[in-house]
Length: 308
Ligand SMILES: [Zn+2]
Image (cartoon, rainbow, N blue to C red; front, side):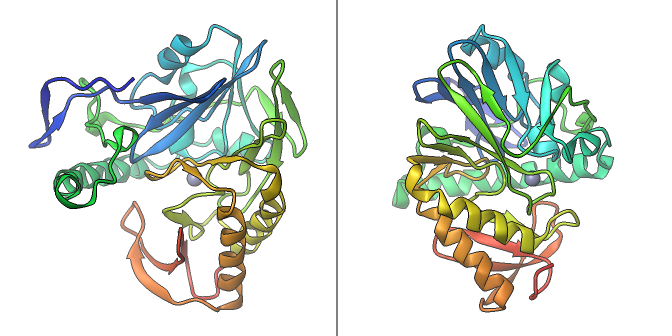
């Protein structure tokens, strides 16, 4: 559904003009609503109702996109309270989040987060040009769903703010969202943040991993993260590996992963806790210095060698 037509100049760079969202059907009843390079949201439909898992950054109208894909009653479910997953909440009436995330959602994050994230976006767009040119020449890994897009026309990065929102429903471990012919079960998977959930569609073997499962740097270093609980959550998910067919994640350019990633991640976190990993210096998206533990298919940002 990406629209590619005339060239478009943005922050001094030339990009193909595209819509902000990458919208595609991943399988029957499951749509990606991606903001490539930033965050992925997913629309999951049953015969009676639909769930929009996360609302993205809020730089473009995700409600309009969802309304083009479904006319069924829509419940927003936030995988956790972080701004990059809840930025479009203000466009919706019915919002669910894990019980722990309810009060967190109502606190506006510091304005600094918005400024720093827009700085990160500028850096991402500046890096994209040379990256794409190298890919065109040598590597050929960039496919349509991986095209980084300029910020939408009319969007002013300086005016970007992150607004608090109010949950109308609080979720608990084991809650089942019955959409009619499709059931999404809530798994409370704390670690990245205390309120993180995954949604599992057991009948169809689908796991929506939120920020608990990721392939670029997994953020386990922030004040609200906890490496021990993260490790326990991944150990639990890893047990479900054989029941899963597809694992969808929210960040970086690999939006889908083999279920085999789950035991790899569980093992990686075990090794981090045991101090059995090399750590290198890196920075997170806010340019905060971090230590990074690198594995074959993912890496983890941790705050200190012992984790936290
Ligand atoms: Zn997060």
